Amino acid sequence: MITGFYHPSRGVWFPTHPPTSEMLGTYPVGTVSGVPHPPGSDHDYDAENNVWVHNPPPATRDDVNAERDRRLFLDFTYNGVAYDGDETSQSRIRDARISALSAILGGATPGDLRWHGQAVDFFWITKANAKTSMDAHTVVAFGNVIAARTGMLIAAADALKALDPIPADYATNESYWP
Image 1 (cartoon, rainbow, N blue to C red):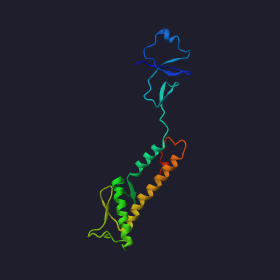
Image 2 (tube, rainbow, N blue to C red):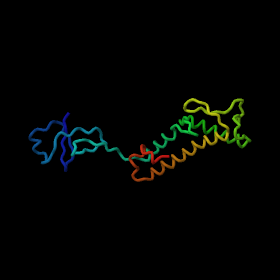
Image 3 (cartoon, helix red, strand yellow):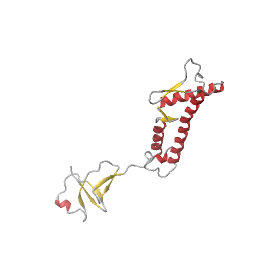
Image 4 (cartoon, helix red, strand yellow):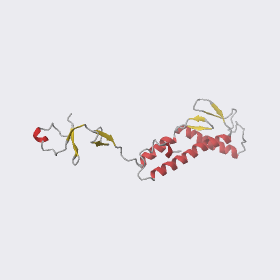
């Protein structure tokens, strides 16, 4: 593979064939040889160190939305216990929350673990596969954690998308996210 050349006013170039000595004589004074090929189009040449430096494209609103959506479905804790936060689990939590609200409106009281009308106590399975008994009021609070987190993540993403430019570390800097 033929290495490239660099000149401060011309930049970097790569000949298709090894240049002859006559051709090399036409290169501007100060031309440096031995420039390696770039690893990708998102790299800039650092002539001082003869290396290519990664220069990612600026973050977009779609990038922030994708990060927000990834975070929406991370596992979460409630009362110090870890629970699954994937899309299916959150859908089930929302359904249980609605049922619990209905039961409370129908008279379910704190401590009533059979508020759902079945002959067994209501429980939710933790990330560690343990059962956590929950009355209707607890299920509502449990579901509120998801609702609140969703709102906070949407607000955080909106604030990031309002920045110009969007910070390059938007996905890794936890200070941007709740």
